[in-house]
Length: 222
Image (cartoon, rainbow, N blue to C red; front, side, top):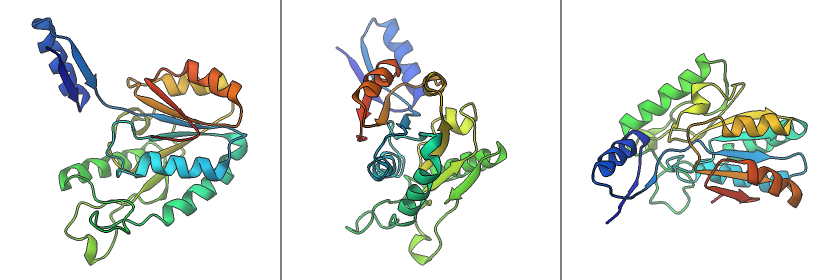
């Protein structure tokens, strides 16, 4: 027999302890704070689309959501401009509607948790570039809706960049030195997934082999 579990880290640790007492093997997929890396030579339009999908496609409620985006300094401003244009065009609404691209969070309590994390990001010195609040209008009054949120100006050591939010919140971080980039990507208790956008296969092998994650996507996410 084997125990399979997908969910929160604390619950997973409890299951692991109980299973160990019975010498039962486990398969656990727990939390995540997955990094996405945009290199200087990346196709920016393609990278923007991938980063948007990676974090907002399930309202961020995915263990493998790409919630930390490391953007090369030489393309940071251009990437940010394209990303924000894409975020502004995301259609938030009723998940039963074919026009909706991002629905509500699972419940009001979880939305309150996401809001606390965003405020924490502000308190840690981050700047919210988009979102950071509930959408306005009668259509959103009865649901646990929250706008797709982009924040910059944080360090990788900030709690918002270290802890799983499980919501539509993306942190933008700059990078220029590859060794420092990899150190930051791997400086996290999680290790589920990562994404790399580049045109150079040598970069893919170099970064991909150094990332301490179970899955590395290249020029796509999920």
